[in-house]
Image (cartoon, rainbow over all chains, first blue to last red; front, top):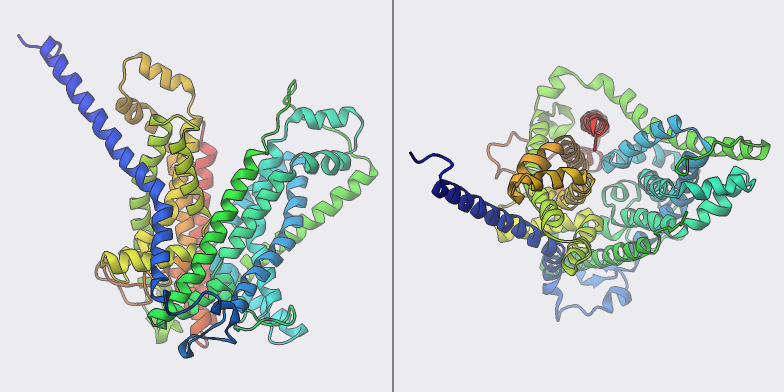
Length: 301
Length: 282
């Protein structure tokens, strides 16, 4: 009687299994290739969106035109470029020291219980819908700044709300760096009689400086790419601001506000401004990646 | 004992620094607490059964949010259903079929890294061009869901890869020693052993998708009516808040209520994520 264990049946089962294995490999491989090409595909689609601009607008006009008035053919992107850089760099400058202090405190100063609790809270806040920050900024921060100087919708409010948005992310990244610090280094410092301050500022910050920088740069990248928060709190005036209290418009806000009614040429300029951000973010990500490679702390015991 | 941190008593100066650090932590927590409490206090009395089950009236100034909640759930579901198998497949291929450090893996990592760090609005433009125009899906829930899927795939794939690398090497060796094929190992050992972690990652991705606004502005549309099919446009909760706060005079009150609802949904997903990540034993 031919049983399930007869040579023929076993061979047939082996063949089916092999076929299944090959099929699985193929399916997973296709997904993998898609993953490899996805960034390129998105970049190309955005690049393709800028095509109507070709031969119509010279790149230098984005800096030499007198004004941003696309319906009349004036394409001055300077204020928006400045707005994007000013808001994100401002948030970077505010958020980095605060994040560093919290991350250092979580690892070297406060107890593990409080640190774990704080870590969970930050984890939740890091993924908070940005529209919540934007709306809260619009109804709470903007009126507060308006009491100092009208109109309140300003570069300053953008910086403040953006830094609130990125602090959890940068803190958690720096915290991860601190927690990878070899314990021998900390114990060694203590054994040499160093205070906690010296252990933190003299040793840990020094050893982790590139990891700290890369965390801060990732935060900068998040701030640079944020759209909704800046649209809601910065006032969106396409002019160079004269002070922190003046409204600004960022590249992302410009796209969100105008793409709805843009004609092909106008929309090509908007795609172009996103292309700039896309390339900036790509450069930043690769720089951070290179930085992280140099961070591996090696300690022989 | 090498991997233990010695506890060291703080001297007076250390205590002062520690107190200053606590003050910074306190201020930051106060700010986040204020975000939640401001919205909760002003929005709580606006949330009622009628609000949750009603339809928006006068551009959202009055009425409820039921169609918007439905849109949100549909877009989220599409994003997760598409992103889960693809990111799982990507992570499986990388961990099971490629050796780390090869050129292919480096290309893949760079691609995912770039996708994880580019502004979300570029996904919006991509979705509006690729899905809506090239594939002819128009401004619709499906376009919005697919756009979000593309956005969360790198996040999920990275996380899955990390999970699979945590799997004890004995599981793999044991399965292969018993003669299991690669496919059998993946489906009978790896995925069952990582179920909790996979759920955590899915919830993480869903939270990210729920939080997104910019990528949906020009992909899923502004319609606040009840959708009849996946090809109908429909605004999600975050876009609703944005629209009420920015474009509708007198929409602030209802925007607060919708914000509270969004925060509640978000906290629900994140706390489920935290629950499962605590259950993880890998």
